[in-house]
Length: 60
Image 1 (cartoon, rainbow, N blue to C red):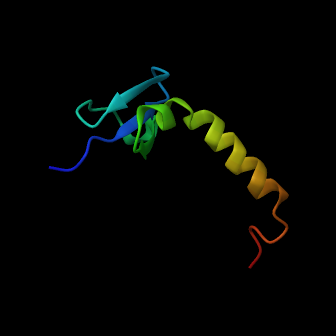
Image 2 (tube, one colour):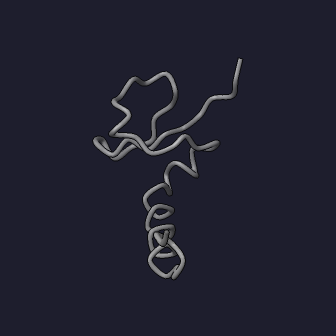
């Protein structure tokens, strides 16, 4: 059996595991640890800022 994965549920603003059934549109992840999932929104913000600063991103 695979290791348990963690997700951040955008609707409930909480960390959930694989055994919780929520719509994919409401989840971020999967993450290997609960701590990573708890920090999901910060990670998204960091990645968005990095992409905004990347001059080559989005070019054809």
